[in-house]
Amino acid sequence: MTRKSFLRAVGIVLVLTGGTCATLILLIRHEPEAYRRACLPPGRERALRSQEFYSGFLELYNACTNKDRDLDLCLTDEQINSYFVEDFQRSGVARRLLPEKISEPRVLLEPGKVRLAFRYGSGLWSTIITIDFGLWLCPEESNVIALELQGLHAGSLPIGAQAFLDSLSEIAEQNNIQVSWHRYPPTGNPVALLRFQSDSRDMTLQLQAVHVEQGNIVIRGRPVDSESSQSASLPSNKPAGN
Image (cartoon, rainbow, N blue to C red; front, top):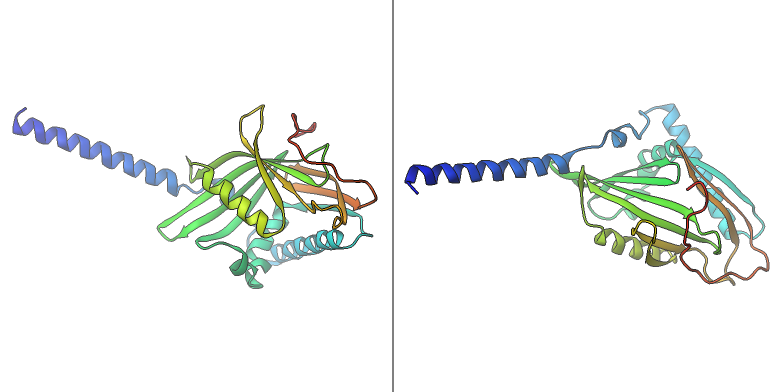
């Protein structure tokens, strides 16, 4: 190979390598349109939606801590995202709850699916992490919610899920939620079974329905009675409609 041919070959390799790196950076830095549109503009309506979410959260909390309260709650993704940019920040809860390098969380609700997105890092060294998961209430279990991990992206680039699985387990355990992982047979995707109030002696609320619809999530429950809770197992099929 002549010197000129060698230099040409090196130049081609450098161009291809640089192009690949630039493409990867663009993929990682991509900010999904849905993420940008998830939040209402500042103003009275956004502040009101934030207050509505907080009131709904208090309703859920009271139902979980009092044995004489029914629960019939509907929350919209507008309310959730308004809370994230309003009272969640203003009250200091964001600083206490969000892990380091994570900020600006957003939630999008679609039929049977939840899309969670947040910014990881800051400035030029940041990306939008998007997590898609199916969600349903296990029909033959007591207070067991299944989360099926359907997709995980940094920008528009798919990434491995193991770090997320480990983090979800750690967060759940810190909040006294038992979690176990399985493979969902129809898709092969990992599924987390989240067991709320797993000790029947402490159970105050029996979940009756958890439905994710377009733009909202519906949660219904009733005060616990003398029914004994069943041992958890992975359902073979999702309930109809999910």
